[in-house]
Image 1 (cartoon, rainbow, N blue to C red):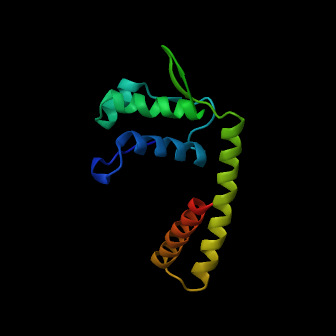
Image 2: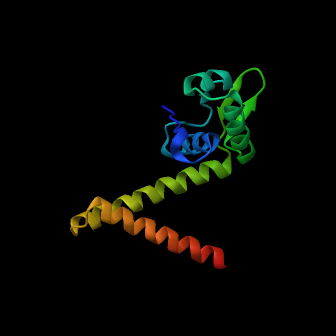
Length: 131
């Protein structure tokens, strides 16, 4: 698993790290029980403060995605909710892939499809906030 943070992205580094670890579990790159690098080791690899990695790990532990074991490190911990989420995301990925394939066959370009998805996500987010 390769993690890469972008300091100029405008998003806090610990949030970028959290998203990448979540994505790795959702995609199957990280599985239940897999050990992540230690805080200091990962901080050195990413050239960030150990506090950045510690905050990301702590937040992911709070979400139930990681288990922090004193002296041994951080481990992926897909509890029932986490496993269900991974399965749900996997099924959604298949559905999105089929839809994208259909849209490409209809002659839409990648950038047009991306704009459609972005617009619909914005619209759906607005509807969710009104509820």
